[in-house]
Image 1 (tube, rainbow, N blue to C red):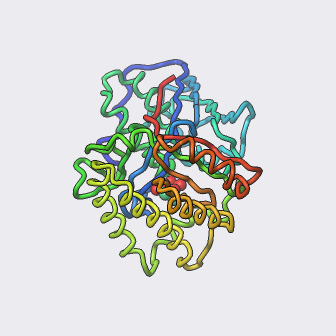
Image 2: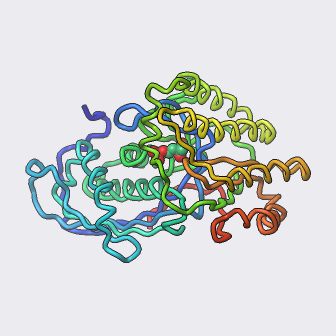
Image 3: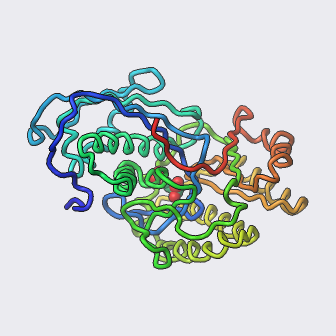
Length: 363
Ligand code: PMV
């Protein structure tokens, strides 16, 4: 049964054709989402930093083909990615359209062209599903707003995050805000399993321009997809303890965000990253996404922190690349460290300098 709050009413006004564009960023989770229930409902709450430079820009061109929203279950569309027609991207977008149809029946009246590009190289090992699905969900909501002008701003962003979640779970954290919580948590009012919300409490200034340098250890396609990984949490011997730990970590982060307690921040963020990979290593079947260079970089970061006292730490997503997090005042010294000691571990010496951003933007 669709969640009633997000089912669009019958169409009152019509648009014949048009075009909407959004850019949406990627995000990096501090408390990780790993394990899900049906319909992309997370097994535990998560919180992420929204990024600034790693983003997807999407234009949705639409043309009306029918007045009738009851005939077809299929949405007709083409995908153009970075200037080239991409048949291989179609199944994922078709699955997304299919999942959101119960909430956006008006889509059936149109034929679409999805024109998209990423600011980061496609084959960089940076997941583009979060930024890609959120940009597309926002475009769908802009169309909905044209058809139903009474849609409020609050509903617009809430439903955009809700739709993005149906495309890729973590995408719901790429719509709005610098720090975003997704998943119901008892200490965070209005937190929801259905969509991401802007973190509602105080955040110390040090976090407002936190840096994320992404060290690209392996730019290839992951051997195990996150869909498979999430599913392996069903029946995982440590699942319940892990889900509880995520709740506890989010709870512990509240005073840490407020006070800017970097020492405690580092402990939680690194433990989260290693627990995520620990879950992978103890799944049945087990798998390993870290590479020797991932570990080499982690050890180097630890050495650097010890010797310099700079509060630099790492986190990982479901892959071999390392996100190195640190305050902006240490940027110069850390980028020297990257050039002198870390690029050797990066594939073709490649890394991406990013920082906390403010969410999506209508173009
Ligand atoms: O959104 P998905 O299904 O690609 O899963 C993302 C999982 C992690 O990146 C590992 C963690 C997270 O919370 O983003």
